[in-house]
Length: 116
Image: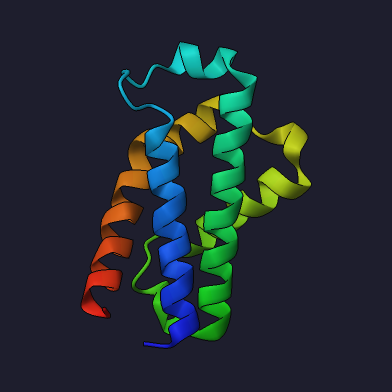
């Protein structure tokens, strides 16, 4: 695997782990998330990093579009958070955290472990 791609996979893994760390010792609760602007902004920043890393990976090797589920949607979310920040819904971000991030974490961990 290309050394740069592996680095970007590690960046994705780090950002996902960072998001998970924001909830350490407490249950993930949407109402608490919604009230905490600092938490929302931190998570949005990590999602930007994830989206940018996925974008760089696909630009370097488009075949990773088959390895990373919803890669184009991940990039689209990054673009929305950066360019259409006033259109970002708490519900959408929460759904991504609960429903999609765990799957991405598994896929990225697998790719990293296969290429160590």
